[in-house]
Image (tube, rainbow, N blue to C red; front, side, top):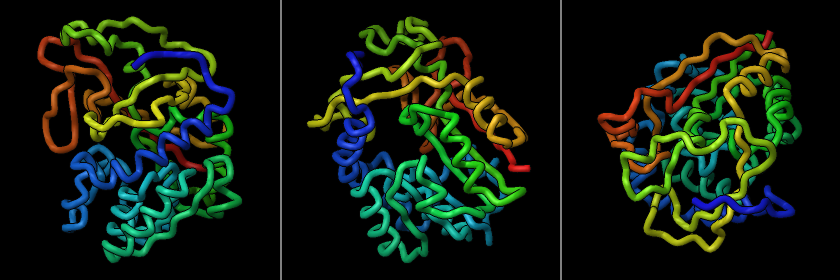
Length: 276
């Protein structure tokens, strides 16, 4: 990926890219749609082992994309609502719900409109995998999570570790791709030009620019704490559901890890927090 100057409206540019990606992702093997429609869950083992029981709980899934995880949570017994800023993704989610015969509600809105558009009083707010980089202000994000939760409600996040932003990812020599070449601390949006879709790398995107915000692990935890959420755990993991750095090795149907010989490092993390 190549870094360039941010555009005047970074969120509009991101929306255009995600609108284009919806059909690509729905039809890709990456999201394992056939397996999902056959009854399998799209939720990976880290999430399944940590989120706890969702049966009978009112659950809000923020940044739900086309609803695959939302519907998997509904299949687990949650009264699930998915929220995403892409109208095309929400339409695809509603279509998928009908195809799968699952009951879930979908709302088209940005995260900062979640309480007004999706409502409040949820037992669980959930978000996972590749979501925070699209948000410019974690303080707003965390306060809206708190506003959506009922007293005693739980927030769960699984996310790629921000350390992966720092690695070399353009070298033709795979063994060089885990060297730190970028700053961990970055201000403002970073605009990237990348015409390839992560789920279908052979597809060339028309909307190839994206604007992303680097949030450190400390900023994530602090934003949640300042919003009045008590941190129950912060776990770091050596695996990730996508190959964030060229040379990562697929180890099963869910995860990629660093190749043999690379130093052991956290590639993802998960947080559980509760509203007092």
